[in-house]
Image (cartoon, rainbow, N blue to C red; front, side, top):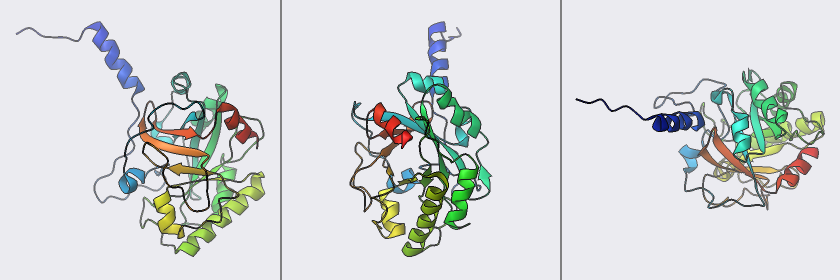
Length: 268
């Protein structure tokens, strides 16, 4: 029987698809608890909130960004720049014992290409206090400088991938932990940290607390065609994580403003 081999054109297309496909987030067997340190921004969104579409069209008043963590490895920043991405956040730390082994490439890569970049901390309120985790974050890549290319640090506070969704804390206990983190970060860097969260988690685990919205910018997670209802205290969002299946790296985001507003936000 004749053997049908892919044509050179088809092979080229297949290679291109493999090179641009987003890396898969770590998968775990049913009921298995992931290893400490393996958490990443948006890890619980699909499981708890699901996905119901993506933004319908490009908006000139929004700027495309991405967020990355160690599971993406060395990131193809030139590819992302060419596709229109202009800002990025990299996971720096988790708790007070984990640092991202790919942080240098993932953090300096976009900066070297003229993109605006920042770092985020995955919070684990069940392990150590908020102030201690803020110190660990700042000491391991989460600082800020007024260079127009460095965004303020982000507190990623969402579903606990290692246990109970709210880390075993009451709503008041969670608010206290977040407050301790935010106060220490501001004292160390001079900037107010961004809060990344999902509205449903915020409702359940902080009692829909509304006391941070006047000070701390909001990065909301919702995989849908619009941003939806925001957590209490915020009338607008600064950033929106809208999908985990975007090109090249998976997690894609919108900054609520044109590129000049991203630079202004970086400058403080």
